[in-house]
Image 1: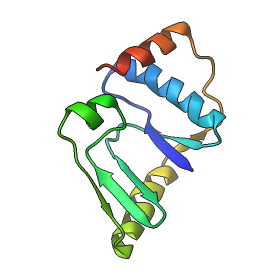
Image 2: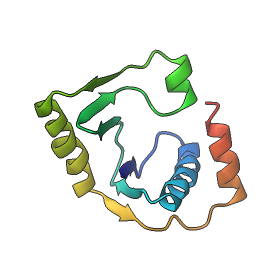
Image 3: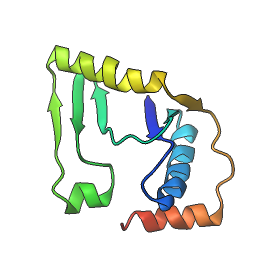
Length: 116
């Protein structure tokens, strides 16, 4: 499994939240890439199904806002999402193998960010 996150985020608190999330992903064998800039892409490919849309994987997007993601098993759409969007972004990105130290402030900020 691979995940790409943006280097640049809209809010400073997002940096701490990303550090904590990346640490968890790396500990669980997920390859993590950092995109060189800002991106708002929300897309994935699972078992020949593509998912894309506006929802983040957070409480606000999933339970409070009116966000929408679309799933399709159309082979051409799945191919385009996988090759053009996901792999294309990862080709521009750098893989992370270690996130470094996580401070108590990172942990606090990541927990606080869950409520935004």
